[in-house]
Amino acid sequence: MDIRLESISHHYDDFEVMRDITLDIADGQIVCIVGPSGCGKSTLLRFIGGLERPTSGRVLQLGEPPADCLNPLTYIFQDFALLPWRTVAGNVSLVLEDHGISGAEAKAIINDVLDRTRLTDFASALPKQLSGGMKQRVAIARALAVKPAVMLMDEPLSALDSQTRELLMDDLVDLWTRQPFTAVYVTHNLAEAVRLGHSIVVLSRRPGTIREIVHLDKPLADRHFGDADLDERQKYLWQLMRDEARAADAELIHV
Amino acid sequence: MSEASHKPNDPDRLKAGGVSNGTAVNFRGGGFAPKPRRWVGFVVFAGLIAIAEWGTRSGWISALTLPRPSDVLDTFKQLYSSGLLFKHLVPSLSRLAVGAAAGVTAGVIVGVLIGLFSYFRAGLVPLVAAIFPIPKIALLPLFVIWFGIDEGSKYALIAFGTFTPTVVATYGAVDNVDRTLIRMGQSFGLSWFSIVRKIVLPGAMPGILSGLRISLAIAIILLVAAEMLGAEYGIGAYILEAGSLYDLERLFAGVVILSVLGVVVSAVIGAIERYLLGWRN
Image (cartoon, rainbow over all chains, first blue to last red; front, top):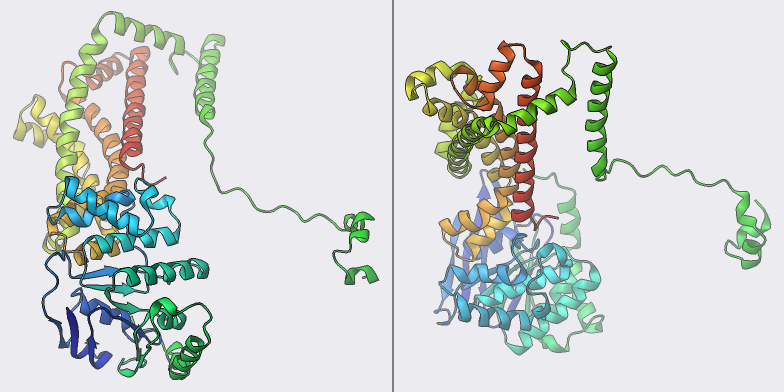
């Protein structure tokens, strides 16, 4: 299933947030969206998943999601959004219950996703007992449980320290290599973008428009921390964004 | 500054005791973190009772000012052995249970509705604000007319008194539920009812339970007020009777029962919190 954004524009009252964004997200690819703060990248992600409506333009699903897919468009949030009163397994089971999956069937799915995220030993732990990286892995397990057609990741690693971030990037690459998934990955961290993105969409500052789309051909599994060619691409991206980021930083926040 | 200060961790200098020349940094952290001190509460209680006992025995507190604690204890023993204790306690507890259960249930339902629906909020918040400051005891005659002189009016008074604080605590708690969790529920396609049952209600539970503490304390106050107005048996009736006879021993025995009731209710809520909110700490 592909996703197409057709000339999306959005404004709050007379405050223009983004202008005429058209973008195709191809099946099995990770598309990273980067841009200076306030350019509307998280808002764009909420449009794609149907949590918010753009002022004009449409988000289209092209083709049908796979038959076993429970929740085609599935988010992974920056702050994990785990229910603190449910265990790790309970948090995964939450998203299955409404699809009428319970008992042995649910158990099989939960065991499978916890195994894929290496959380099997922590199935009965509460979120407060887990480190940030583990919490985000629970959120990833929860997303995998509904077999999404597209994963919508809103700065998933931004709340983590840099070492945990490296580890989780490796985890995501492993997951993708074993079973390629489609993802839209919003981040302000260019290092994440060049490690995980098949294509990187650079947005301009507000009102957000697509400035450039950078394609990276190197396979995800071959990309490593500190690769010279990736650093080169990262520098290039930073050159694109630098002045805009500075201007965006100097703006008054609109509330 | 000597030459040695250019080599801050020079082992010879450290061994020679060069460090001890400085003054120690004053400790100025700590505090502002209450720790549990279980026995202190008992000591305060026991101390006050001991002073009262000593004062009344030695005579500097007259028997009219304060009854002797040991006499109060004797009165309490009599009350127990004569079987009157349970004759008073059982109707009181059942009034408290029925009235508070009705008031709290209605309060939680209305509070959740206010928390979830704009029209309920717009319509009911001013109404609740108008009802809240009315001393419910002042309405007792009205309740007697509406619900009759016996149990009905007592249930209604307690229910009404617990209703408003429960509503306020509940909608405040629903407002405070983490919106990102609700967005998460929506993004996974959970039904509206599932979101309310599995995300909103558990998330609001801490606030609802702390509101419950206040509501139930108010319920005990109103219980006594209702029983003072017209009841043959009940702790309130017992206290009123003792008071009109200036029988301070019995008056205090009744007051002690109320205090114990308050402590028990608080402990029960504490136990419920530990059971339901174990995920917090």
